[in-house]
Length: 427
Image 1: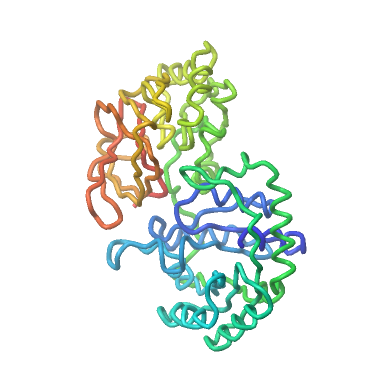
Image 2: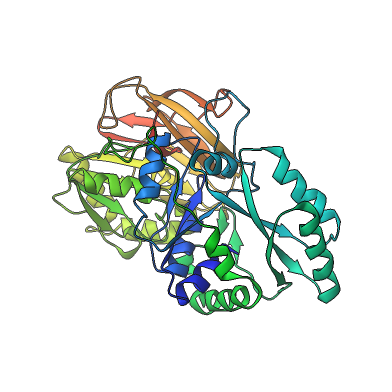
């Protein structure tokens, strides 16, 4: 629904931009493909209200800002009092944003009135400004859903019919990435056509209002969410290393750092003058044979990382990047592939176990991310298992969103460090 609205509004000349609530790398890339404008993540659990306000204001040149929720309206948050609320409802209440509820109408009629009423009354801070129904049947079904919306006292802005042949492919970490999805532009056009034909676009656009940042929530400059690792930062960017939050790269750029992309999959090494190298998360487990082959080249990414380590550059890996810094990676078929060997780490995708959730952690020692004890918020989402991990930890006191201990300490060897955490912000 979000992609269809973005493409329809774009073609109507409304210059929409998008944002995604919660920890998600994949959806914002689809937003950008649909609208032609970069999308950002807004995370109420990990980010301060000031940072959220600045990120919303940074999209102020857009004609319309569409913010996609995470799961349901009230989902994505820890228990009350646990230190933050990452739900769409909390963000909407904080900034006075109108909510457009998307309801699956496929297996209900008048019951939709009770569902909508529940969403409307559950939290009175929320302005439930409208509803759209998805997966609708024929005229009789639409009449029933129309009556349900009237009974619930919430205006309906349209009814999208069932469309079984429109789907996006998925894999173990969610949707296949936008850059890997064949025929994506044509699919987005179909979604735009479908939404434009069945929804009241003018009525939906008229719901928008300026975010209520107020005197307490300023857009004043602030320190970067994650401090720049150096002044010339080589960043791995390809299908194997695609999970980098835009706000972190924007912060580094605004702080005066130069971002130098390189592709390990294409046989590229980090810039020889880089004083830092960042390997973000991604899918090294799906590209292990190519990474191993390119890493074996004398001018490849492994040689480049080792040269960077020898000259004292900071080298940091997150999740998939952490796996790549290790000695070896076992793929889903049980085959072993050599990686960079800069950390005493072995990981396996053949022994899968889901690791998912928000994390809080404190630095175990001084380093480029700050002094010992500096706190960070982030998240963990992977299926890899650690088969060997030896050396000083990067993190201590790692907990989940509810304060329960979590085993994601990572490793730190000199100026080379990493862990399975995707960092979002200090705190």
